[in-house]
Length: 269
Image (cartoon, rainbow, N blue to C red; front, side, top):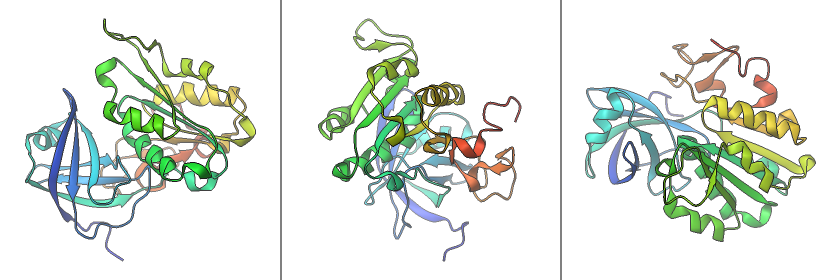
């Protein structure tokens, strides 16, 4: 078994600009280990440092990451182009346990960049669509330019994914829903005894989404959240990502609400 600190060479094969501050990097990595939806890697920019970034596709030929321009490391990463190389180590963390819920209805909720974490779940479900019940994908963003992966929407809908979109601040050409993502639940029929919820986005969004799912009758153990906060070493040694009695990088980033209920939403924790 490889050491968790093994750094592999990653060749940037393709860069896709999603919007003015978000890019997708598709990396060619030899003999990269198996990974599951919700896990993350550490991307290393030579002479600058490394950052934790979610794996945003289940494809194996190229390892995909969606990166937002925040901080010095991502600034340098955004300067790189196709043909350049970076370092990569991983995969790390827990995953969305979608394989446990065959036959169930699935509700996926994403806010902003959180769709990067949810996208691999969507792809996984489409590949195995007959094994699951109804699948709903609720996506919110601040404005239309913040909606990621627009070129994928038609394929998702053709894959029998019930896609619902909303924005907080519409532009003149926006004809869709306006409001917070929890307002989209009025368009969704759920059987709470056979439905699992999975989400990623700003913590305030996940707080109110969890509250809504509980109101709709889902059990605490069937609600999963991606708690991506302050990760640094990826293996639980530095303590940077401590979240109450857990370390996000090691015990998460995917948690059931049942596990983190006492600490979720607590300020300064």
